[in-house]
Image (tube, rainbow, N blue to C red; front, side, top):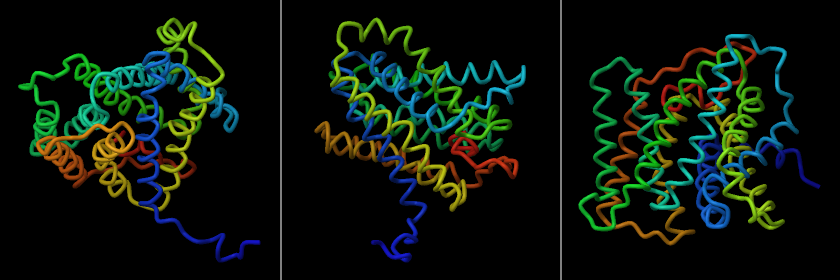
Length: 301
């Protein structure tokens, strides 16, 4: 039997945040085999569908609170989430995980810089872009424009996701919004995902998709919510700048994607830009009854 002190051992909030990021990147790395079986859209559809089932099981969608003006932002957020998932998974089908994360990272970084109303803040997306150039090395013969284009599309979708999440976050808590938007995201991915996955579904693939849905989005969201209750949004956003580096690390450990020295320099520039973009970042105040979510941050929403 555990003692009272053992039950109350505090977990550092930064540990929760880093674990959430590791869960996201682990889920992405482990999705590569599933992509090979059912395609990127099929993987997105299965993962989002399983995630929607879990979210609907633990949270009742606040449909009675939906006003007429909320419908388009909620639907748009769900569609954007589906497109972002498909685009990112299509990117890692062609380019290394860490490179895809770094390119996608330009989306929220640019949104943060533009919303800062400080011209000097625009230097950080430029620094990150330089890092991405070093990562992708377009002067090399193995440059993959298709993978880069998909990652860039995922970055644009992430930027739109941020803006729409802030809009819906003014009226709904994070878990409430997710219970409505993730099913829409799954339906969006189904348009392309079902034809890709048709004829390839097995019990093993469905079980793998269920496990991946726990890694992303269910577990990371829960950990991020817990972390944000105990740390400032700026500190959380600064930690999130580590995500491209974690993508490189998981790509190396799981997918055996070995970065070159110049690519390591590129990822360091992206991380530096992401951390520096948090200086002076602000968060719009949430209503007292709402728990803060990552979407309340200037950097990620």
